[in-house]
Image (cartoon, rainbow, N blue to C red; front, side, top):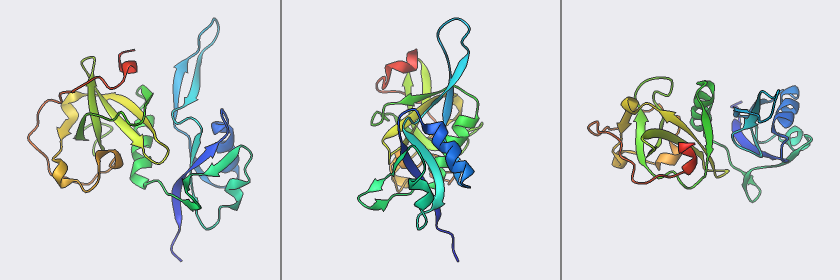
Length: 204
């Protein structure tokens, strides 16, 4: 029988992301909580882990067998529209995983502010990722949203690895192509020019 496994966003109670993820793993599910390390203020305090997508755990499971998910302590619901759960594209999860696993500083980014240029990354650890790049404070930032939960993350990238894309060759908006390795038509390479500063925290 074909597998119905897919990635879904599981909404959880505040500050319970990692605890819920541990419970789901014990139940045999594949789970993913993208975290970033941040310094704690105060003497004697080191770095601590903070979820990049607060209030959500990504979990892979068969949508016809959700019973053990919804009964997990801390789980509020599986995200969808009405009574229909909506899967998250595999390539979108893979793009986020590659960014988090790069070891480079990642920031949460306000959803809906992915203004910039649609590009494909041509080299380095993010090679093949298609997403939006914005320029602020003389730096280039790759912005990867998860449209289903209306949250996004941003990471600084090398401008030399950016290839602007011909939007006419893309069948979906740039925000839906995060992680995609597919070959698309490329325009002549030009430096990315930001039209505005999309988020002040880029400069912090």
